[in-house]
Image (tube, rainbow, N blue to C red; front, top):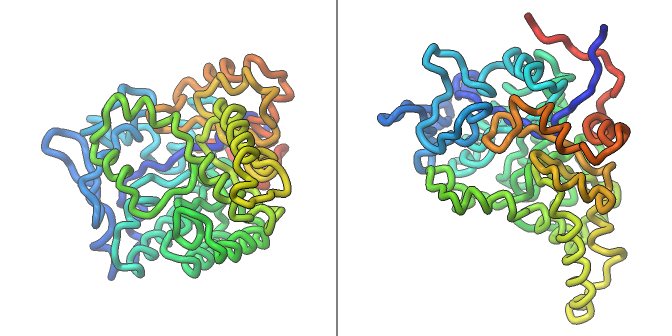
Length: 385
């Protein structure tokens, strides 16, 4: 019997050693590429130009106890730990977790820390190399199930638009931005050229949580393994998607580009009713003082233009009547520590217990298919033996 989409994860990550993609880096820049090194205390860490030693244990913790520091990308027998192997291994992991396809985001050391490389040409070469590897090697095994988001460089508008066009040619499922297209943490008028180009190319915009700033010092602190239980507990409650939405609304981005759609993966959704109420209420209180008169409420902009990804957020569906379910997707966050692997079926049942079968199917299949341009009835690539 042919396999069709039953569960699509809108949030997965590649957490891979460097060798598979470094070979795509031009030789003149290869010595500046990230390196994974063994640590004296055990496990591995990343060396990236301009950054301290990076620990990535919380991101390679799927189905096992979390080790913030000194985690390894391989088991003792040399087998890649879950989420760190090739595309064929990834398909087998999807089968194990009851998932048919994943929207794939880049690892943080590629998407963010290489922003610290001072040489712009070398930095852009790294981004291009990863995107080549992603589309030509990793996802090529099953592009209907491995839905790779190409990285957009944060080195300026010209680089961003050039890589957007190249991502389309490479066959990427979408594009991921860490900053606004011109490279800043707030919208700039020149960003509009990028948004228009994405619409013309029919290239989905797939953010992760929100839009940040190059060389974020808080990111460096966390990567150094300087986590605390307090930081870990609070990190998922401070929703950066709200800031990105408010900034785009006030900058008039959605007024100028009414067709623009933005997806915030791993934003979760149980915060949305309260946060959007507060945003609307504060806008009503202060708009006259600041001389701002929006065409609609901020919350209406959000639900017209934005989509949100839930992971382990069962509370969201308990307040489903306060959400627009056509703008919600689900993700496993594999192989990260707060993900649901290998128990995604159990988490899905718990999360969607208050939902009808139609609502569940909308979030797990219809919404990601519509957003990423997938055929919901397609016969999917089988998993290699």
